[in-house]
Amino acid sequence: AQSVTQPDIHITVSEGASLELRCNYSYGATPYLFWYVQSPGQGLQLLLKYFSGDTLVQGIKGFEAEFKRSQSSFNLRKPSVHWSDAAEYFCAVGPNPGGTSYGKLTFGQGTILTVHP
Amino acid sequence: ETGVTQTPRHLVMGMTNKKSLKCEQHLGHNAMYWYKQSAKKPLELMFVYNFKEQTENNSVPSRFSPECPNSSHLFLHLHTLQPEDSALYLCASSQDTSAHTDTQYFGPGTRLTVL
Figure 1 (cartoon, chains in turn purple, orange):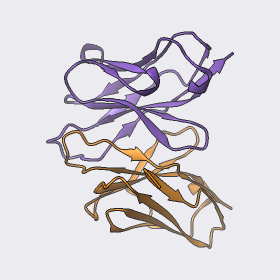
Figure 2 (cartoon, chains in turn yellow, brown):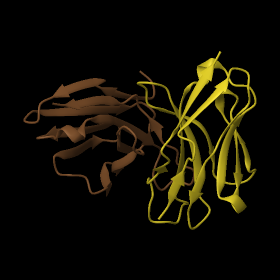
Figure 3 (cartoon, chains in turn red, cyan):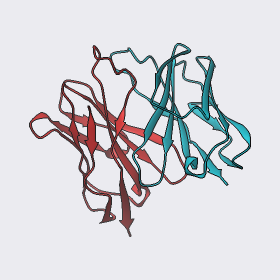
């Protein structure tokens, strides 16, 4: 069964500092990987996704993530955090086509990001 | 309206009430999903519809009854709920669950409180 672990429940950074949110996954084949962001009272917004190819993926709002197969990780990074980035971030893994679990995204517990001025 | 919309945004109901949540997507997608988001728990997939056919029921209690009349609309009918059903219910849509690079897009959610 697939699973996703986000080891950090809560991270606090200062505005302008760099950010890395960790995500580790467990999946038998090459996974599809996603990062979503959720602002308070809102739904989830897709930041970026990895399906294949270049392991460094660029997303919206200046975010990027790197797929490392050897470490089963897909960490999210941003070089300089803005106050508006304060939100909850979710990593998710989905099945590769050819499997039997179409549509079944598995989400991590989420990491809450607080940004200090 | 663009994207995925959900109504109502907030709902308070008693355990004996019957209510429905509505989701509408304006993206031309063929797959729709219901998720439950409870405090301190990962997002839980409840139901998946692809081309109006239910393809996934993730062991959801029968007090939750989904309906997908067409690819643009998805309902979640609620009856005799329990207080532990209080949560944020999120709807999502995607092009097609069998598509090579299928990506889910989420609505803003309905905050449900069961008294």
